[in-house]
Length: 410
Image (cartoon, rainbow, N blue to C red; front, top):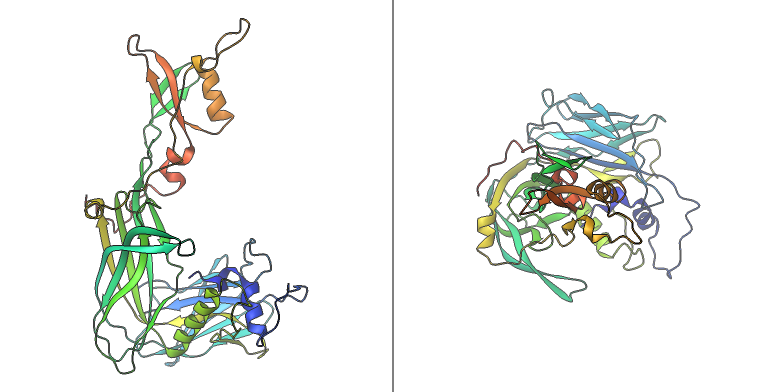
């Protein structure tokens, strides 16, 4: 489930306003009002916490206007006050040396905008969270395209250790995977028909992705047993390059309040309607933030407070290969091999040179030259090999900087 309250303000604003069943119609947005969107989470992890501030916008294809001129601070029930550092682009950070969440304390977020409006969250108590027992994977399938097709792949699961009467849980994850491009650029072409080896071949890189799904669960009140087989994420094995070399996922577990659970649950139901405000009975998605200068103003988002436990899983290709699942293939990465004889000339014209081929594909058509082909008898270059940029340079879609936590298992 995508966090549409960060990207699609119009839909949620309408959900807030409409509380009765009406006939479908095309809404007029002339009375559109930009609302404050807050995305903030503090935990007991030893790290800097981030609060993001933006405004809703009418055009879903536009970049949300960031609120970069606010004063943001957090107070607790012990009388402490912690100012957040303005990092620009609507991002406000805590100082990891001066502030860390403590289980049992209640925290309140304060936001003062440049216009003088003050927004305050409800006090949020930091609850303890049980340890994660294990993160693992198993072969699975998923229905797609309106349940008309089946995708094969693997699903990541979580088991949690018993909690201390924890009733509401939320999970998030961060993916990282190593991949390679099929035709890395190994040579540079110099005008005049000379090629030289590339010093830094960009063949292997890493990609990362953070979850934007709502993963929540409610257990029976007073239940203290472990939670088993929580589905976290499905990977269709032939739809991405995640499993081609090695894959890693960091799963985080939070213990949340009833109010926060209801916020995520309501948001999930709104999104399940397919972003159609008339598909189901509209209802408000209640935030825990309020404008103290205007009690009628709606605020989108939620100030989240929870202890956190986390666990990382590595899946090398050798483990994935044992499942005999379909592999991912670079369908769009065709090798283009061209020599001057591929372009016949007419009426006495001379055939194109290697320089002409290079100019045609690399300068005019934005292909990458990746390597030459040599004549087996003379040893001279007789053809040039080209491909599309993303198939030759892994840094166009990833980074060649190896993550600090990475362990090569293959």
